[in-house]
Image 1 (spheres, helix red, strand yellow):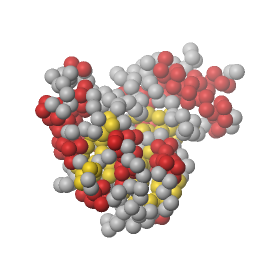
Image 2 (image 1 turned 90 degrees about the horizontal axis):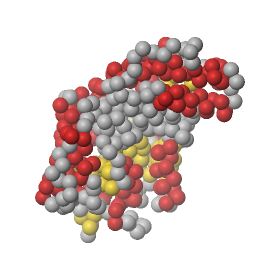
Image 3 (image 1 turned 45 degrees about the horizontal axis):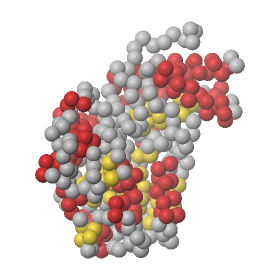
Image 4 (image 1 turned 90 degrees about the vertical axis):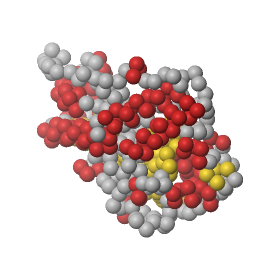
Length: 390
């Protein structure tokens, strides 16, 4: 290591994990309201705090009139499963997958719900499926941003305005960081632990009026667990979207989410959040353009994520090594940077190709991204030399 001088500057925060993600700048537990703690979530105060989280979300996202926001159990996974189990089966469904979570939804629809009329469009990490093949007379299920692949849909132009089916969008690493065309999205899910830097355990589901109509007109062919039920007697349980949660939430997590939403308002709302993530992406792109060993996992720049920014190693020396050594490189880079307290948790997702994953969501300071980049070069040089000297 002595042959490779360390960069002079270090990130003020080494938290670049893709979930749970970095807390907002200046966060402190002392900033959280605690009056509701120890109280029932069904008390007037508890319900009011949940309603506040819902109302602030609706306002920051500029949701259209008639769109509903609900806090649900089990993080984004719970929100997605709730939507799939409650609403699929009325039409054929097109499933899109280009990373591990999208593939999970495909597996659930095929092997758990066992729907007959399912078309699956898949692509390898770094690519998108052919979006032109999607039939919007059918229901469509997709992730906006593939958290484990760093690949996103570039926009909503591919979604038909006159669709007859519903669009189900897992937006957990996209919402608050990318522009979503709400008029083209019927069911959107996410969790607070991503772009807002909140805590895990709770999901959020957003429904369009068309999604509500489906819920009230369609009876699934399978038994529905209580935790997934959004209707009773053929009518929407609208209390879910007014702070009456299905099960007991952590009110401390709710207070943390409200704190993050207030911060978002202070920096300019959605425009401020988008600006911060775009700047983080810009800095990484500038560095990648000059790098002789790293490239974006996304094959097309317009599909590269500005939150879960995934890097692959393209150094010809590394590509000439066997698969075991190639896999060891990003792991060693991550270990080196963790040891230096420069970057935590940036090794790529376990099912993804070997590489690094750097979170660039709105809570991450651009100055920290800028300080990290020279350290990536340092860590790669050290890891390469260690292997070459064996």
